[in-house]
Image (cartoon, rainbow, N blue to C red; front, side, top):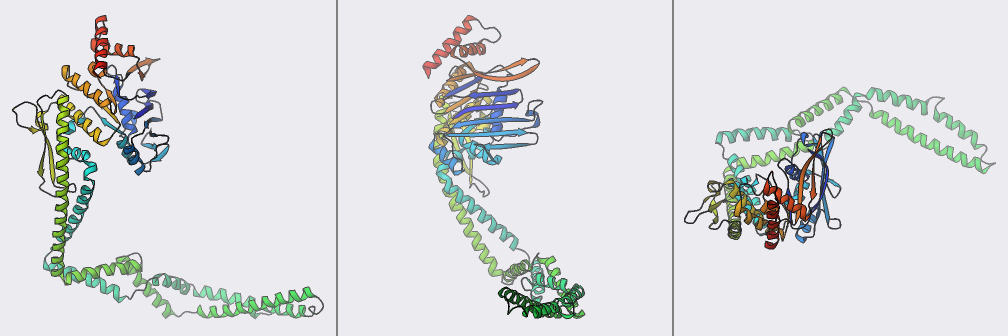
Length: 557
């Protein structure tokens, strides 16, 4: 459940911290007090979009932090699958908002915004003021059914998606393959030209690198030869060369070897140096011979490099890539030269891919229909709890005209609100207030199936009053027995059911306006109910009515 909300520097909020309790948490306050800011802050922490003007004037950043106590094994497994480990049972989601960017963290570790949203979906479900309008769009009905049946159709849905991708890839290949004979002949001729050009070049992997090294050597052969000749002169030819000097030193030192052991050791070292220098001079002379190149060698090397670079410009950055391109084109040539056989084989593959897709789509549909019948009955029962006494709710299935990655089912919610009336599409029947109650019934059913611990409702009471409002309050209290519910409301009937009652209020001090929130005592809660009931003037009678409403609510719960 959501234990703590911490908000800083957002809109009218300077800094607030709220500890939420179990069961039904009710938030009330005057219009304009900032109730929407509180819920908006929660949305931001869960990855919602924001604009620069959400930051409190004069501040450089805003911060929202949510701390959840996670005890549900189902949630813990899902979080562990995301490599999120609740620390002492606590998961903290935070988001630091700055102009043009934000930083998201889970348990203090920076994460991508997508991972924050994924974790939030496991921990909390938010129903905003206008979310019930999504029920008007038929495309959302299939998503609700699939969310309800998620654990039952996971394999069928995965296999259907895989089969759909395989079929689409095969169908695309078939469509591209069916070209006229002239076009195929033109393509075949062009491919043969390309492959012949590459094969005639007799490419060797790595040849280009070796030739470039050789070309640099040939191009600078004169400079290399001069340097080698000069070095050779210093080490072996002149009277003042290193070799001549070593020979004199060896002769001189040899006279001392018979008199002293150390002189003998030094003599041997000097002899070894002389041997190394002789080896070096021999290698230097051999290297000097390799530095002589003819104009013909330079010309041939240049031409071969130009040929290789020309092929690399057309077919790939390296010789290996050019050869790989050639092999790919040769495969295509084989297809075109035996096109009838290829086309027949491709059609067979497409037919099998389509049959595989249809098989999995049928299996997916069967599971969907089975689970939809359970969902259908659960929603209808939930609607009856919300004062839809003669409701008839159905989930209709039709087949789509085209294949899709989520199968062939076209799902639509149908409803009849009056006895004797046929069911009709939800969008054609329900009013705004009715839609909000229908969404509440759906959310209650989904929460039980998904094991989501925390539900937030922003003004679920839109368009309702009287006995319907009482029914909604009783439903909220019922949900609150198994879940943590946080609800913003204007109705006294719902507020009276609160396990924890918070007041959101706006204050102005020294010309600065801020929004705050505080937990009300039992007496203060009755006073807030009286304000909601009485409006501008709160009389003793109104207070008595509020106290009576609170007492009856406790008895109902």
